[in-house]
Length: 437
Image 1 (tube, rainbow, N blue to C red):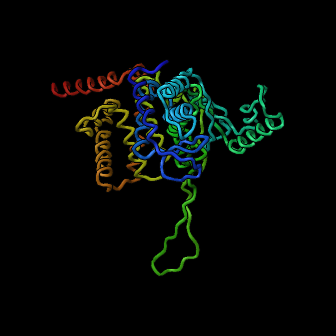
Image 2: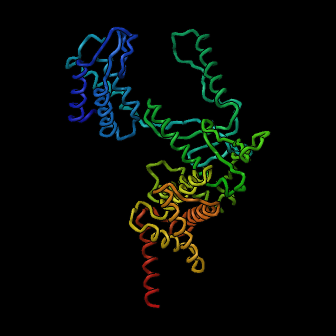
Image 3: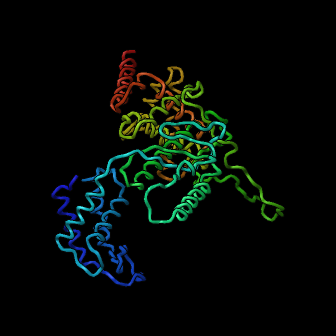
């Protein structure tokens, strides 16, 4: 698909400025700037020129590629186009060369949208539960032959001798086995343009982190809370032992003390159709995760936002951090995108509509106290968060999330306005009843 005239003119103006860029024939030149290597040397962009390049790339990404191509890929394509049009660092681009450069960008970006698989090493999920599917992510035990699944014999014509090609394949297998051979792994299916592995990797990373946040939401529901179970990417290990020394001033100390602050056991997962999964609405969450991001409803996104914050809160090691994340999850779920005044009062009213009349007053008091501490912590950094505060925030948040996942009419809702109207109507109805009593 060709560029629009305005975008084509913008790209042409940028390319025309290329003749003013500093350039050198010395590949060892180390001057500051963004380097474009060419066969005869390098081209450099100063800070202003780099900012102009980045703005051009962003314009192509938003106006032409509709955000679906990665910024990094488009930047690489623009760089390639410059080098295609400008065959060495000492020649300036004429109008025909600029036309070729623009055509190169259009050709490279005119690719089909295809399905990709993105693989990650993970830690913290009990291997007895594997393999298991959670939405668009499949989790697997340590593989015996993942490399064989991913590295194929190359029968295509090639100038390299077969012995060299075989050596390359063997090297690829060994590298995959080194990274994935000793730990569970996950495969995430995402959509991205053909040729844009950066966009596929970014989409895969976003989806695996969302899925792991959801898994961690359930970590202390299916296993004892004191197990501190936590699922994560292998590159994000959890500290396990805290060493410290505490002594009365002037007293002799013989050894440091240690405290186990990390996971005692791994996260346990159930298939979505298991009764244990249905008890906490994991079956519905799995269905939401199966959807492509563009097909998720407003309510899906609202629920996932709450699950994400609450999942991070579940595994947070600092009490104040966990408390704030639980309160953020509660606010995202119950208030949605509304940022109104008197939010504490509105939270009390809305969450109260999900509780039975006999516990509504007690729940309202707890929410007011928790939100008061949340406000002091955020605005002054001073608030003592007790174990009881954290326990209350956790229980209220998780109970609210599961109720909205399981109960009608919420299960049938797709729009934020539907949920907001339900809360407002219920509150107005109670107010009218109270006024008539």
